[in-house]
Amino acid sequence: MRTAGNVLWFVLGGFVSWLTWGALGVLWCLTIIGIPIGRLCFNFAKMSAAPFGKDIQFDDSGFSLLLNVVWLVLGGFVVVLEELTLGAIFCLTIVGIPFGLQHFKHAKLALLPFGATIYRV
Image 1 (cartoon, rainbow, N blue to C red):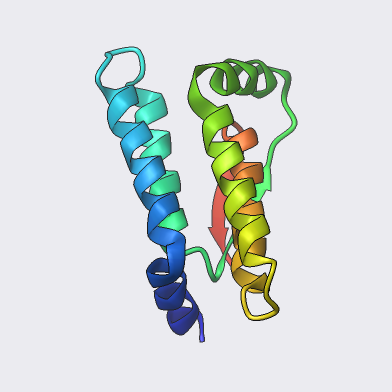
Image 2: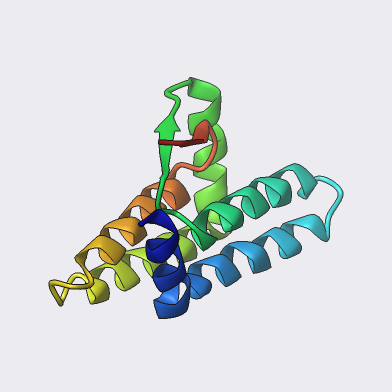
């Protein structure tokens, strides 16, 4: 069931999220300082390609809060808006609600990427 959900997810719009995280990772990797952030974006791109069966745990440390604020200013806000918009569009239909909820989960991840850990459920 996870595989079917992940295939449908990718075909029906998950590739947009995957493409956004991948492009952001490439842009961050253009600078030496941004390579760790780019690698983080690539991990999130992998998660956004197949989100069913995965969950996110968030850490509440002060250092990650500071990095998350810098992240929002330097490009994360656009990803948050994209994920919220896609989530709202998918939630307009009953069939799209599971996909919309996945987009909302990704919006939270885009809002607070530092201190987030992806794990399988």
